[in-house]
Image 1 (cartoon, one colour):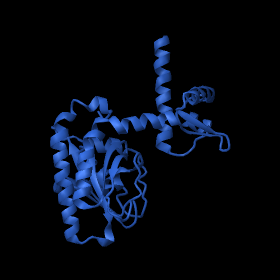
Image 2 (cartoon, one colour; image 1 turned 135 degrees about the vertical axis):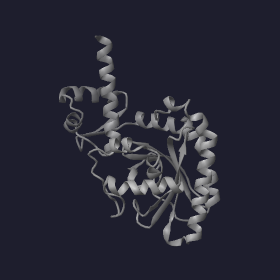
Image 3 (cartoon, rainbow, N blue to C red; image 1 turned 90 degrees about the vertical axis):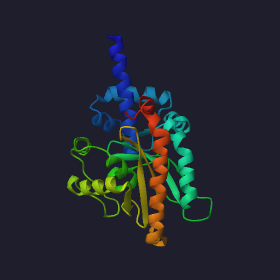
Length: 266
């Protein structure tokens, strides 16, 4: 009985952390309780324990909670030592050197992608706003579409069941019927192409990092200012992305099946 109670408490702690991470804004105790279907008294007690361990922070002026410094430290530790991140660093560097543009590595979580890392060119120029650890809707991003293109129809239907299909710039798929041909084209050509769906004037090309059985565990992409690129430039970027992602898959994907549990991806 005691063990079962401890497991339930652990599940609730993880639910709170996941909720605060996904929402990305301060949440009141009642909002957390209602979102997780927990009694308010239980939620309040749990949050106070988590605050003592610095996994959440309370903001009296807003009467709301956010993730705390300990949650950040755990995430930062993963960023430094996670096997996917470690393996991806040299490929992001190679891609940035080849294209002189910002490269990034992302994974799928639910309907969002999370940006694990990025590499920016050393030469002066535009710096893109995608931050490490940030989330964006997968259907709007090249990295998201690259990963989604490797899922079967049943998996896609499960992920997007009841989805509200947000838009950021007015472009991008707004239904499963619109997304499917985008993913089909992505799979056929080996890379995804996003044209200003997340940030006006910024385009992105990405390819999946796949395991031996074809599962996509991440995507490697390059983002650039669309106005300064010719069709020939874009073709060169696409070739660099697909080649580098292929090398990443060959060098890491062959070992990734043994690391999936550790990575928390499968």
